[in-house]
Image (cartoon, rainbow, N blue to C red; front, side, top):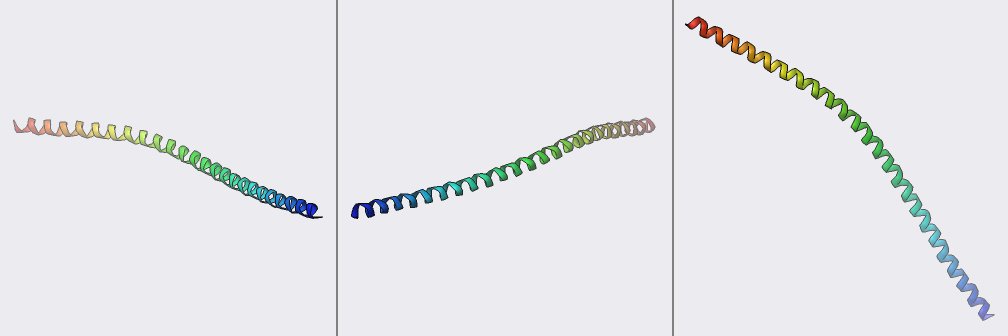
Length: 90
């Protein structure tokens, strides 16, 4: 009887350890699932931000052209006014 009781106790301890291991595996799986969901969400947000950056890049390129053209026009008008002033002062 003692051998059977000891054997049952050992089986019980092993079952407890097995139950604890299965529980730990389930927790790890939940953490992995949550991490995967977070990564998916971050990738989605990154894709959205990349799209917005591409749009801003196009806007900046258009504004850059406008600024260059405006600066050239300003300097043409400024040099014309200075030239006209010098011409009238002679």
